[in-house]
Length: 119
Image (cartoon, rainbow, N blue to C red; front, side):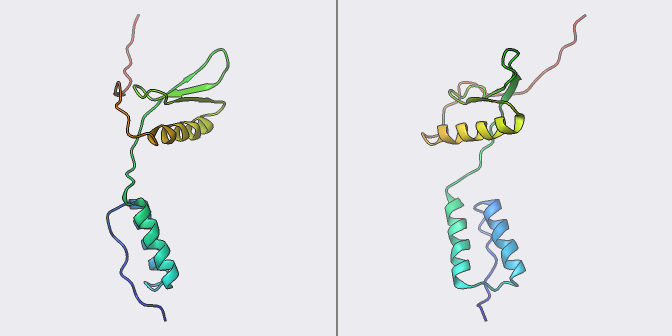
């Protein structure tokens, strides 16, 4: 039999903790040492990572028909694509790439959209 282990609840990363907890519940709290090590590595990998959310503006270019996305005030955070799904992937990739150089000092902050009616 495998040793019983307490489910991880480190509060480090919700996805890692949830995935590890689901696995342990299915296994009845018993896991092989190698699997336990994998779960520990997964949680420790996520320790230093915090999820941050960025909002980006989407426009459709009338000349090319492409969707164009950009993060307001985040230099270099822009992309284009033929579909919204592709644009989402592109934006995530470009933001992750830009964050490799460190957290940017945003030049502006996206607040929202307002509507005005005119006669």
